[in-house]
Image 1 (tube, chains in turn cyan, brown):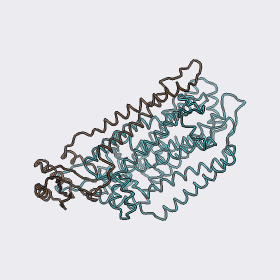
Image 2 (image 1 turned 180 degrees about the horizontal axis):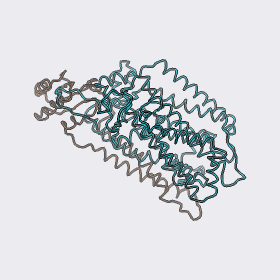
Image 3 (image 1 turned 90 degrees about the horizontal axis):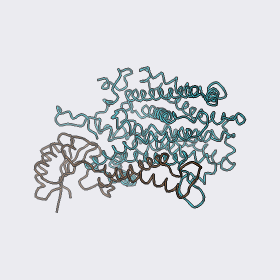
Image 4 (image 1 turned 135 degrees about the vertical axis):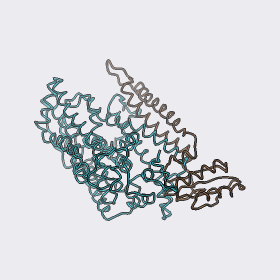
Length: 468
Length: 167
């Protein structure tokens, strides 16, 4: 079978993605030894953390400056009162989509290529949603009143409007963050037990004992664990689809040209999965190289993810074109004018960055040679990240700056404060991820062991795959 | 007083054979350890189906009721009156029903798993060996003192790399 060849062999025939094997991983001891070796800090890791902290420092400085000076230092220019902060909020929520997609939906579909990448993607999800959650707070200008966003009944004349998409958003994001974190932590429990059993430092051992909840790897524990994991996956699957649908309602419920369209929920969900997978590449591809994990995240795994990216890119590209069709076929002059202005007028540069990065460049993935080229996939992931940020820019800014009333048409230029907070968000995200990588296994030890053939006394008995 | 005998195995099929014989001879109550879930062990132990799903169902139903209720109650208690619009309406409130259903359903599933698996647990020491999280399989046979020798013999016969008594 193709997948049993050397993992880094450059060209292979197409493979069934549900049966991705790890031929270079021989036994359970090797899994523990190689994956836990990542936990040792290196100079490169300290360097990465330093860069992340520097970016975070810039973000903190920008935010403190904005709090001191007022929201006017951001680039808002009426009626463009949603800008970089809302764009970045939607961007990070989108990034957070791939983790639960990989860990839940692909789990239910028994897609084998998820096994070695899902832990990193889940952690990415949690940290991305943590990052996204900051931006509504930054956007309101007076962050000490952020709890007004929470629609709790009270006696201070803040009446929750349960028909508002913004209130739906609070519920959706809170649920998503809670469930993603739960999913990540539940999956980590058996792996923390592995760390606990190998730890020699008594203080760390105590901490790991508490975090592992006294997990003992009994059949009883695994049986309930597997069942619970299945139900968590089943619940998370519609959650993945609902969260970005609800985020899209923030726009689609507004009677603004370019926003008021029923295509937004599937368009946003596909875009979120697309950008999330790109960020998984951005993280995983350097990791597999620097930590010597190319026999865990093989070219077959990357090939399979590339097919997902290609598919979602085609969906997103189709949505871009359908938007134009709807504007033309709907016959609404404001819509037609807006879309013309988006692509050939005031915002042509942003729209063409979006179209090039999200529609044109991913077409390269029709080539198997490029799908199996990690360097190209990493470069493409950066383009997709940029393109998906600009997609949200193109949705937010051109609509608000080119509304139905010509007298209020305007422009929007982000200031250094906006850019500082954007860069700071990357610093915040990567700081958490780098800390995670050095504290907990970034690949699921127990699940990888499931696909490694167990030791047998009788060689003729092949028990194949275990697992739940 | 009940005591036990622990067998540590390197091979999966040896573990399965030991479990089958211990069960067949009804030597004692078995606890099986493995670094990863294996169908072979589950078939050998043949446990009842996990009732985690009941926690999931109860949690999800409670969640969906609470989600709708909080939105309807909040709207009626603090009404935002808009001409021609109902004060409470089920369609937008389905978002709350769904989101709270997922949240409570998932959290109750995790609670159910913890409760049924008997975690959190303060100690892992009785009948446990750190090798079980690494690469070895284990069978802990809790039995009466007069059956310890039989349990030990079965474990050794099936190739346990280490057999030791514990209490």
